[in-house]
Length: 92
Image (cartoon, rainbow, N blue to C red; front, side, top):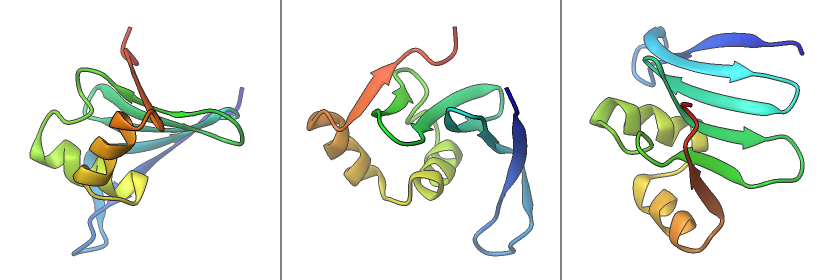
């Protein structure tokens, strides 16, 4: 499997941000904040998966999760409630 890691960038400075990563794999994209996987977006079929414990852990995590998903926290909450997104343990 081919894996590529890229630092996220600050919306204000456009500089790379430490501890906020997008991980590209053959199956999809992951968002990692510090040492925790926060979200997985598969390519093609399948639901977006958010980590049940860490998806809304801190202000910084939420800021970059929102950027990764292209939406605000309220939209994310609604998609979880509607079953569009799945909660699971992504850090086992």
